[in-house]
Image 1: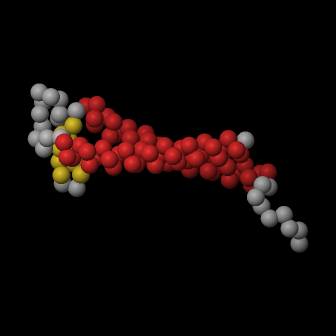
Image 2: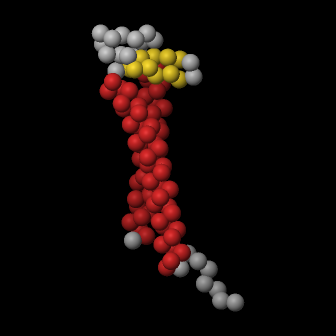
Image 3: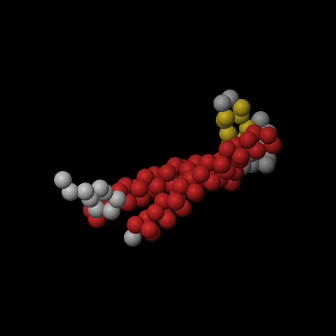
Length: 103
């Protein structure tokens, strides 16, 4: 079981890092190519504000940015912490990784 938890933790950490990289890249990409005024005809009415630089995104682009932040980055970080806590409790319960020198 500890091996499964370790694998799950590493996977969640990888997803969180990939989400962070994708979020940063998309943020800069959208700031470079999207209009700075809303365009309702194209559906670009969702505001992306990066330290005062404002551009407008479509609903799908806005959803992707939210998903990467809340689902990918934030969610995977929380799950990683939960898995790490379960690993620690399991190690403590089984005595794995503890000093077994008797005094």
